[in-house]
Each structure stands twice: as structure tokens, then as C-alpha cells.
Length: 303
Image: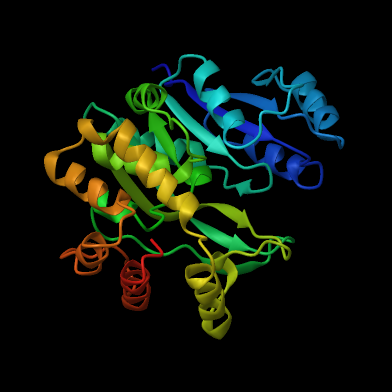
């Protein structure tokens, strides 16, 4: 029986330090019908040279021309626009390391599902820059609905796989003006398709010491980070742009209840929308304290 074609899309930029380890994990995949397409976004280090060496050595690795720097997320959407026809599509960061069965496990799960736009996410192991384990991804034990993707990451792009219908859906519904990628895809696929989640880890998620994110923080440090990012200045304006863009671009295609939700959360005017958001009757975050913090930001009109 012929294996379905899997397409992996990678955007690189100045990734010489960890890129070889990532590519080695890709060529070690147990799934044998995987084609890899990489676009470098104008790197100034040795990334392009590394890519050329891998392309010369492996028949399934293909380099797309990318002398011009497109920036984020335009380089990603260049790849989705120019990707060859496949059955399933994967995405990768340039510094993570995949488990050997990552592709085969995702294809097996996706192939058993009914037709229609479908996205698959999996768990991951959070590591430091030397791949020492720091933590694991949160477990998901319920169906992921549209409301669950508005203010919480349901999965990371490097763990995901989508079928051909989902790729077509993405290409027909890209952001108009916001710098959206991961959040956009989770909202799109939960709203106009389906998302399935596999709690089994599929990769090592490399977090660098210089990266300031919540994924590697716990306890007091995490709450200090939250306070700084939720309550200072207008740090939520970029996220509001994503919600507004999604509401205008995709909103009318959603189910009525989901369209009402995105219209509410995209509103910027304080009265009465801050109160309607604060007392929204459905849960938006998994953790109680995260939910409470979000409601406070609604009340003071930071989101």
C-alpha cells in the first residue's frame, strides 16, 4: 500500500547553532514518504551553507529560494502558499528535535478521522538549550472548541500536522493585517474544522536561557512575568489586532455562537464590553488562576 505524502515546511533564519540537530531528527523519521521544503529568510550566518549540505545529501530535502528577508510571519505564509500538493502537512522550528515516530504517529491518527479540515497537535518535552528536560506540556483531556483557542494556546506549531483540506482552508483565510500564525491557525481550525490532541510527547521543545516566556517559568517568577505583561502599558494591543483581524476576515464564516464570541472579544470600547467579557459565562483558560487573571484584564480593559 502506498504511503500518503507528508510535506514538512521549515522557515529558517540565523539558525546555525541548532539547525543540524533539528534536520538530523527529521531525516531520522520512520515515516518514509516525507518531503521537506525549507526557505531561509536571508540569514547572515552559516544557515544557508548548512541547508545546501543537507539538500545535497538527502533527496527528500528541497531548498526554496529565499534571498529576500520577508520577516515574521510572511516567510511562513510564503511556504504555505508555495507548498507542493501533499496529503498531510507539518511545520518545524529550526531548533527543536523531533522524536523518530513523530510523523508516522500523526499520519496514523489523521488517517483514521472523517473527511474535512483537521488539525492534529501533540505533547512535547520542554528542555533547556542543551536538551535537558525542564517540564512537559500540559495535558488535554477534552475536545478543543473555538472558545478554548481565543486566549489559550491549545498546542504549538512544531507539534502539529494538518490534512490537505485544512491547508486549503488556511490558504483561503490568511491574516489580513495582523502578525498572526499559531493563534490564528488554532482559531481557524477549531472554528471551521476540527482539532484532535495527542498527549504523547512528539519532540523536544528547546527553550533558550535568553528567551523570556512563560513556558519555562514557575511559582513567583511566573506571576511576576504575568503582572508585567498583563498590566503594563498596552502590551495586549497586538493580540487585540489578531482578534480584530480574525473577526473581520473569518468571523462571518463561523457558527453563529462563535461569531458572537469573537465579535465580543474583538471589541475595544470599554462600556459595556469590558463587563460582558469579564462575566462571559464560559471558561476561557484551563487553570483557575489564569482564568481569574484574564477576567481582571478584561475588567481594566487590557484585553
